[in-house]
Image (tube, rainbow, N blue to C red):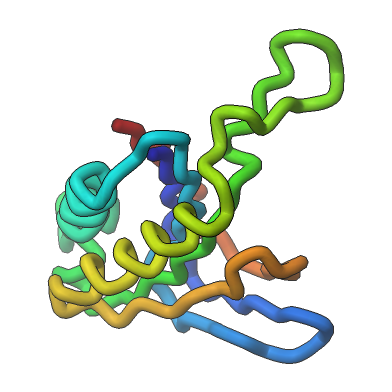
Length: 145
């Protein structure tokens, strides 16, 4: 499982021009599910994301988590995180989990992250989403297990 975690000032997500989700500040997390991933990998990553200290404290040091600052998380499923372009120029997605199982793990991840008292907003699994975000820093962290 892979997560691209970005610290943001705000993010909006639309599908077909309709506003689906937005967060005022916190983290936008793009989540890729790999073939064979289980709830164990999802639980590990969500715990890590909930406690990831990438917000500045009073001394300007990255020492606070999204929980500490009262931020929200927009969690977006993104199978293209497992795109492999090492052979040619068209990515292969054979490492990405099949949609039926990936969606179940994505929904599990939403519940798991919410269990830490964090407000979690979602994208629309499998949809063509348009995301606008105002990155803060920018701070981008890649997590994988």
